[in-house]
Length: 254
Ligand SMILES: Nc1ncnc2c1ncn2[C@@H]1O[C@H](COP(=O)(O)OP(=O)(O)OP(=O)(O)O)[C@@H](O)[C@H]1O
Image (cartoon, rainbow, N blue to C red; front, side):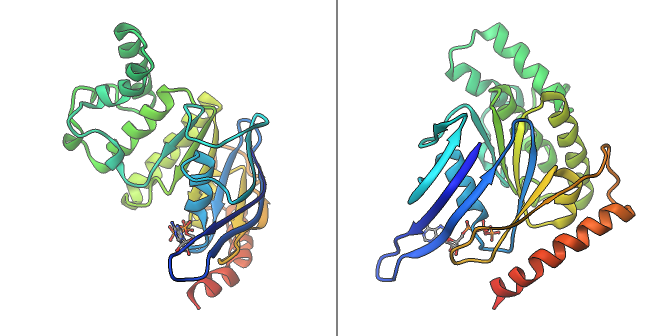
């Protein structure tokens, strides 16, 4: 997936237009895990919304396999921070089956596929439970299973673990790396947590503070997997990224 010279300007009634993103360039290679990291309000969600096709760039292009992205599509699976996207009146299994049902997949195949993906996220025995009967971490895993069941080319994740407690977050990070390695899906993951980015990503794309935000620097995380969260190497990357974005965090708070 490619973002080339992407600009996004928001028209705000009664105020000058707000240039959120300016000349944003990023290439996501097939099967790569990229974290997008930047200070609050820098435009991470705006970039994600454009990748998902929820909003259009004002200019520039977003390409998936060379084709322009201009609307949401099954080739891109989106996972949000909140699990409100799940249907509370359906069971976990029915939630995972939903997209397959919409695509007219026969019931037996649908059911088997949903069970496979629930098992992949460690919820093989929870399929019959309704969403409200599941913990926050389990609900996030149902979201991941539901999106993966549609076999997207790319997974777009907007701070998916931010609302979870630290322990659950770590478990889900481990599971996500495992799922990524098994499915080889390309992942673009938004976070403002440097530790999370260093643990997960092949590359961390840092963003400048807005307005007119873009890529500041892309840091390649050359650490073998499975990774340790705390190691000398992880600390070096942590410090390096902190150096890159500390000025942007200051600018965002000014
Ligand atoms: N629809 C809109 N109309 C006007 N301004 C907008 C709109 N959407 C976003 N913005 C502005 O664009 C900037 C980037 O917002 P965005 O939500 O993408 O940032 P973010 O990096 O995801 O923030 P956070 O980390 O706090 O979630 C902000 O200044 C925001 O106020």
